[in-house]
Image 1: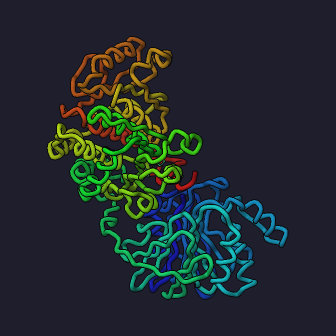
Image 2: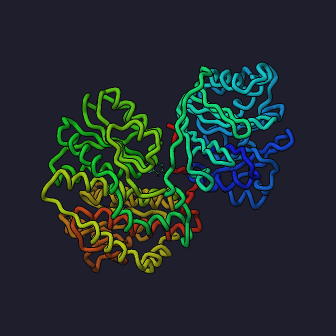
Image 3: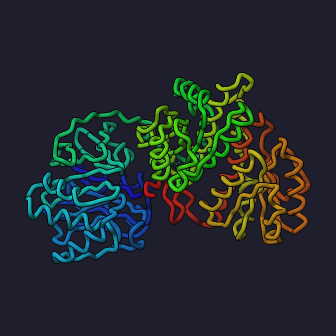
Length: 585
Ligand code: G6P
């Protein structure tokens, strides 16, 4: 998860590339770099940090020329250093590349190239691509032949863009995204449409196993055997243009505040698909639900609402675990895959395993152009707009709304008034003062525990995830009843405990747990629609249809995590060491 971009057009390449990288920074932000070609010379600038920081230090956008490549990195092979930052020039300096993904046989290739006299400056697997291309280009003197020879040698998952000293660009894709933006004056090669959406909404999704060669604005798309392949231009939704912070200080805050609107529109465009999904679910022998991170927490809630409201059993599976326990899946089952990005490698691998077992795949996904979309038998769009903040917020709500819509269709007894719910959420977050005050208290805390029972337990886990991601404070979700089986030993006056305690069947037991914790001196934050003297701080949630409690509980905690991040001076949009879409296993 890095972002790559290539540009060729009438404009000055460097500032256009820097803008594109800024928008794709969610894919990785350890380092950034740009290389351009001008008068048959390649010049590279790169540094550690985020796009704006590095650009203001070394002016990436001042590089000359109308052709260039750029990269933001999420470190996998090699530390976060300037030498490991992309673009990587080849030994001759006549070729430079940017790469996203992993080259599995890089050690073997590196040795081969070293024996032939090539030197390597970085610890990355990517630098071998630059030198392999140089070697093949010196032999063939032809870009097409060079790329074919190069991709036949490398193993792994990758997308790369190579720039040659004469201004030619070439890019290849193997299981990592590569999209061509086709403008009137410009051509882009990019990991995401966000890299070029400001300039064109015409996109070509390059298939895995294909490559593109580009000279000026003329391009050819070929398969790895060198045969020309037909391409289709897709109009990309202008909605991607929404990826601006507007008046908000951070994307994360904007995305939290978009949730009343998400409640109204999630799953809206997919009524027919929901009906199809319902038919599959009704007739299923076995149902499994998978996801990673936040999307897995949605799967945990899905299990509970399906069993409680429509008496359908479904088993949640952590996507990254399935490859080690494939025998838990029965053949010919229904496999629901939840993923905001639709690109998480763990989810795609889980789907591959399920497909091999002849399962039907229902995908709940936000990015409808993603790999997961192409693998689903039924596609349920989350429809929550681009989510840029690395920690998932509005996409979690959107996933739950889609699941509620499925449950509603499965049962005649459930009516959910989404308009009323959306209004109550708007009101709840209208004034965040109280939450900001609690965030100040959390600034110097080193451990936070979150307790919930039943359907509120997945919310406790999701809350812990948000607090970890945004504040770097150790946080742990605990099923309320398990407190006495161990975690109670951790409670003392330094600890803060969040009690998820709506007025449902878990209320009384959870209030008792809160009292037990309070007796050990810990501070209690109650998230509830009922006030209690046991809470040192009360976060009030609306009195609503109890199926909706999970959403009304998580939103104030997302805000609490956000404001605590502000207090701690961490960057809520781009938490350290993380990336939004984890496209490696
Ligand atoms: C990454 C993100 C998480 C996200 C998870 C799953 O780890 O940092 O916020 O929940 O991936 O992402 P997906 O796109 O599959 O929902």
